[in-house]
Image (cartoon, rainbow, N blue to C red; front, side):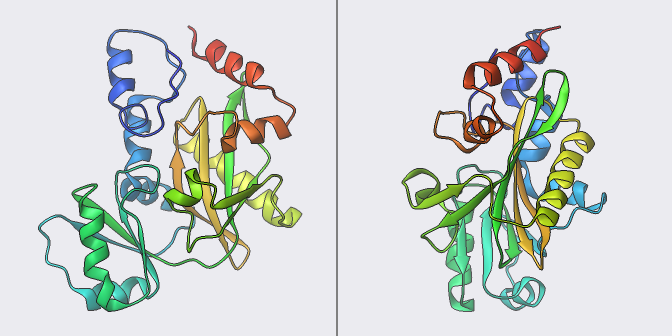
Amino acid sequence: MFNAIHGSPGEDGFMQAYFELISMPHTSCGMYQAALTFNKRDCLSVLKTYGIKTAESYHINLGDAINEDDIIAKVGLPCFVKANKAGSSFGISKVHEKEKLKAAINTAFKEDDEIIIEAYLEGIEVSVGVITYKGKTKVLPITEIVTENDFFDYEAKYQGKSTEITPARISDEMANKVTKIAAQIYEVLKLKGFTRSEFIFKNEEPHLLEVNTVPGLTQESILPLQAAAAGISLTELFGSAIEESLP
């Protein structure tokens, strides 16, 4: 099974579990890895123990008491309010004022019963594709995300409100750092297939935002464009994934 379903149920472990139960090879990572990476709070918590830098965060479940002062004391303003388990930037708001925090929390709860509120990181945003290619872990050329909007939201991702620049306009030192960390994440989490990790550089240090284990795979999606920059055609990219999945 060639898995190209970005988001649920192809990226959150449901399909992986089913295909593993019926012993059908598939191109994505395992069930546990998919479920873990789709849960932003759990994934970032695991990776922090390996020294991966992330934004300061605050967690709320549906039904919890909401103390706006405690939230702002922890993450500051502006901050990002996110649905914990949702793709394509659904349920995400950037909050600049305390008065708008509760509305943003309610928006996130429409997508999930768990949310994560993160400190705003100001810096260059990059996307790093990591794949298994011809039997080896391969980090693809880095893409810089430049958006017309306040952040890389649904419009920016899917409605042309952003520019993706590959290779990213960053120093060799920054590129080496984020390449090493992206490969470390792939190995530590025991991922396979196609992945794409998102980072923001704060003081030239990469801070992880999230890990996608079934990134977009259209001809115009970020990961295939990164592969093309590395001299890998779509046929070679997809063919390698199929070969890697076979027993």
